[in-house]
Length: 124
Image (cartoon, rainbow, N blue to C red; front, top):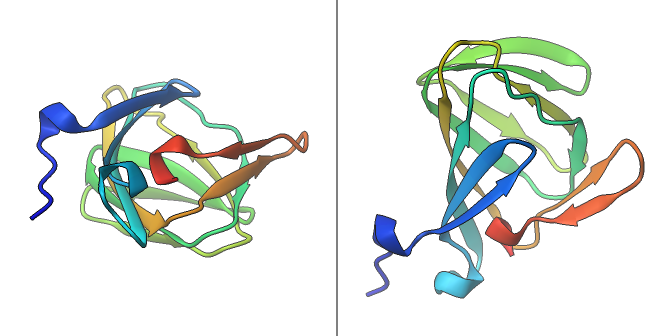
């Protein structure tokens, strides 16, 4: 039975945020990926368009999310569905770290406004 303990999770850092990967192909997952996101106060991730559906559940704190041009403040307990092809910006305007739990399918990639791409290592 695959069990990933916190000490075994793989930590990635990008755009000032931490992505703590628990489920990915490297840990034995065949279809889905899941990670804990930590977005410090004052962090703003650049707008990016995703190729896979993502489910983002806010565990703690609050975030300002812009999805396809519509901005909304989300708080602990809220869940956001990001469909493939959607453009997403995440900003933490609060004074404390926001914590998320995110799931997606293997193969998540993001494209930024300048045309650059990232194959998310926490989801591949």
